[in-house]
Length: 131
Image 1 (spheres, rainbow, N blue to C red):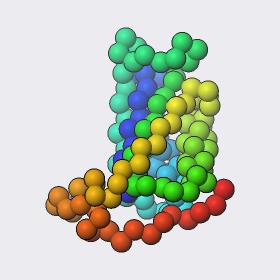
Image 2: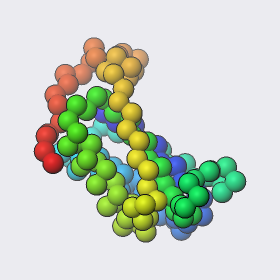
Image 3: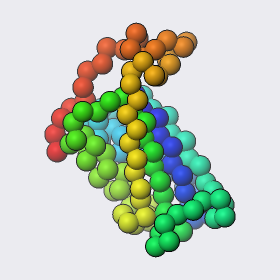
Image 4: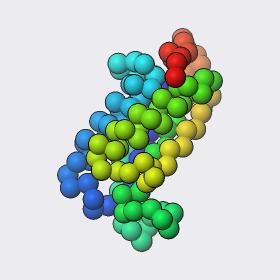
């Protein structure tokens, strides 16, 4: 289970917002080795005066925040970083213009299926391990 928020400056997508969201979903599937990962992706475009990026960043600077159940294996996180950079790279975002933040949220802090804690609803199996 994941929730993804993508923040970037407005104006450089040229109608490819859906493609960016699909790239994020594909990266999640690759990283967690599943075909259908339960996720939502929110894309937020900001006016330049409402989005402070590092001074060396281009107008395509993109921040990706991934909230997920705890992932103990660092290899999964590395896979996610690589997959996100590759997916965004296909849209013209340089690797140096991508910042990825993973926030691990305990099972009991996800409310699903009518407001029940995920810890009461899901049988959690660790995602596939590997590089």
